[in-house]
Image 1 (tube, rainbow, N blue to C red):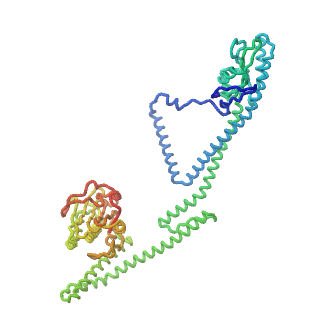
Image 2 (image 1 turned 180 degrees about the vertical axis):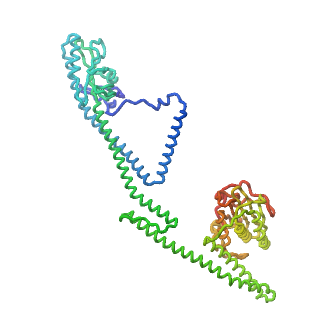
Image 3 (image 1 turned 90 degrees about the horizontal axis):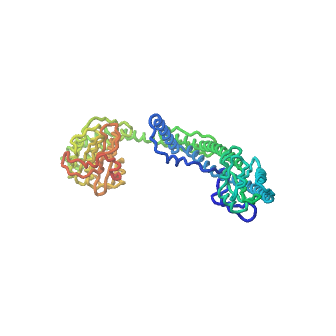
Length: 610
C-alpha cells in the first residue's frame, strides 16, 4: 500500500514520523476491480431465451411472491414486525460496535508494533551505515562481500513480523547492483515517494507498502519500510538502504479477530431474535386470542371467553375481558328478551284490536251514511269519527307490517314486472290527492317499458308512499317522477319542489314515527311509518332508497332496484337529484345521459330526507 503524499525527513538521525501518508493498518487491501463498471462497459447481450429465460421468469415470480408474503406478514403480524425490527436494529448496532472495536484493535496493534519497528529499524540502519562508513574495502569484490554480509545481518525471521533488507543504487557509477535478502523481491515494490525522499535526505524515513509475495505465500500483504542513504567504499557512492517488515501475520491475527467478531455477532443476533420472538409471543398470543374471542362475540357466540393463566397483567386483562363479555351477554340477552316481548306485544295488540276496530268501523260507517239526518254538531262528529277510524285502521295495518319485518317473517315474492306500469298505477292511486292539493304529477322517462324482477305489491307500496309524501310536502307545486333503466339497475326518483329539508332531517327521514316538524299540521292522515316500511321493502329487494333535500328547494327520494335479484348494486342510472326536464303526463324525455352509471354515493348530496 502506498502513501498518498511524499514522506519528508525531520531533524536528527531517528526515523522521521512522516505520517502525512496513511499508516499501513492491517486489514487494508488494494482496491478490487469494479465489476459493475466492467459490466457496464461490456457490450449489450441479447436476453436469454428458451429454458434459461423460463428459469429466470420462474425465479422472478418466486421472488415477487416471497416479497408479497413478507409484506403481508409485516402488515398483519405484530410479532413478526417486532422480531424483524429487533434483529435489524441489533444488526445495525453490531455493525457499528464491531466496526469501532475492529478499528480500535487494529489501531492499538499497529501503534504498539510501529514504535517497536521504528526503534529497531533506526538502530539497525544506523549501525549498518556506520559499518559502511568505517569499512576499509578498496575493491569491488570486498565491497560486494561487505554489502552481502550487511544485508544478511539486517534480516530477522521473527515469526510475528519478519524483516528483510534491500540495497538500491541512487545515482552515479553502479558498482554494486541492487541487493535483496529475499528472493523474488525487487525495488519496484518500494513506495516511489519513499525512494524520492531517501534520495534527497540522509535521514531515516518510513512509509507503508504492499509486499507482492511473502515467504509464507501470502500475496499483497501489508508491510512497512524504513530507508536511509549510505555511502559504500571505496569511492563513497550513494546507495539507499531499506529494511521492511512483513505484517501478514498481524493481518492474519486481525482477520481471525474479525471472524470471531462476525461469528459472535451472528450467534448473538440469532439469540436476540429467539428472545424477541419468545417475549413478543408471550404478549401477542393473549392479544390474538382476545381478538379471536371478540370476533366470535360479535358473531353472536356470547358464551366465548378467554383462557386466564397466572396473575400478571395479561391475566388481569383476560379476567377483565371475560367480565366485560359476561356483562355484555347479560345485557344483550335482556335486550333481546325485551325486544321479543315488545314485538310480541305490538303483534298481539294489533291482532286483538282488529276485531273491535272492525265493529267500531261498521258503526262509524252507519253513522257516516246517516249523517245528513243529524244536526250540524252530530253530523261533524260522525265525519270525524269515520276519518279517525280509517286512520286507526291504517295505523294497525302498518304496525302489523312492521311486526312482520321485525320478526323476519316478511317474504319477497319476486316476478317480472314493468316498472313504468307500476309507477303509472301508483300515480293513478294518488291522483285524487294531487287534484285536491292542486299539484301536477308528471312522469319523466325515456323508456316506455322496463322489466325488473321485483315484488309488485311491495314496489307499489314504496312508490305510493314516496308520491304521497311528495304531494303532502310539495305545497301544491308540480311533482316529477323520473324513471331510468340501465343494464344492471332501474331507478325511480320522486322529486317535489316544496319546503325541502335539511341534512339532519334527511338523516332521520326513514326513522319510525319521526316528523321533520312535530308542530306542523298534516294535510292528510298518516301513521308515520310509511317511509320506514318503504325502507324495509327496499332492503328485501337489495335495493337503495335514498333521500336528498334542501330547504326551500324541495326534496327527492330515489329508489334503485337491481334488474335481477341477487345482483349487487354498484351504481344508479339516475343522479340524485335528477336533472330538471320538461315533460307532459306519461313517458317523456329521459334524464340527462351523463347521469347514467355514476355511483350513487358520488352523485348525491349529503343524505337528506323528510
